[in-house]
Length: 96
Image (tube, rainbow, N blue to C red; front, side, top):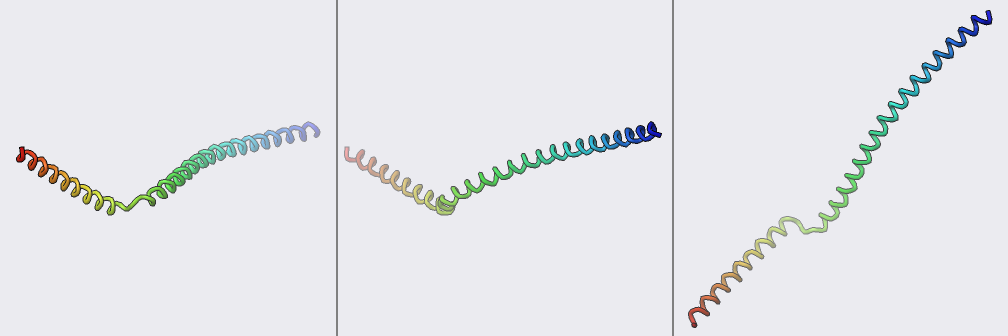
């Protein structure tokens, strides 16, 4: 009778040990998945922070429409300066 009880206890212990090992393996797999998820979330957070910084810097700049308008104005002034320089050069050559 003692031997029979001892064998059943040994068998129950082995089953319990197998269950514990399976739980350990499942938990280890979950931990690996969660580590990957945390790493991915860290990258997303870093990207969002970088975007926020760049957005703040972009808000400080003038709008593109104003920049394009200024560019056209400056180009017109340069052409006007170039035309007047050409006229001055022509005037100087006629005086000589």
